[in-house]
Image 1 (cartoon, rainbow, N blue to C red):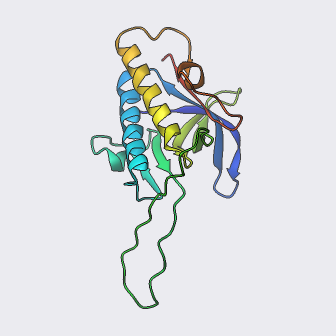
Image 2: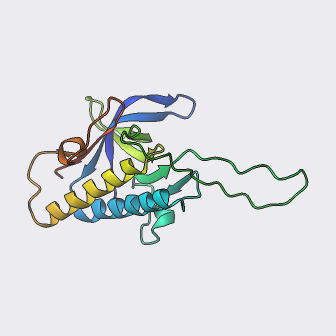
Amino acid sequence: MLLIHGYQRSVADPQVQLLTMGEIRFPAAARELRLVGEFLSRMADDLESGRFCHTHIHIGTSMKQVKITDQDTDVIVSVPFKSPPRPPLGTAVPVRVHFVPPPPTTSRGALTVRGYKRRAVNRDGLLEMKEVTFGGTDPRNIRAVSDFLLRMAEEVEAGAFGDLPRYLHASVVGWTAQADDAKIAVVPG
């Protein structure tokens, strides 16, 4: 079962209770870390190559071996897109949207994670998430989360994970945390 927890930073859309997350916590379970890591790696590949032609995609859509149930947390990658030019009125043309990668820069955009809560877990504000969405325009963020989760899966499998949470911003060489970044953690089960 894929259960992701997190702490809310703010409410992104009060009408639908969409939350902007300050921190996301993955359980230290190798299989789940590997599945999410592989999904995010595929999405980063598609974003970098220009093949990503969706507004968003769910883990269960991209990876047929993943069956998300009502008890699981759904994982989604979402990006802004440019709409194609409108066809002349009355013309039937299939519409595809394309992600337009930003021009390469040395600085990256913020790592944005939004989601919907399933329920509160404790009084400290920890939430069990129904859905988490990694968004933004910089594929480097998706790649960094993917690499981190895959490395944590290897450590769990090798019995080298330990008893303390591990954070992306403290574990990835060259990662400079930005004020708006969501913290990504893997926590002991």
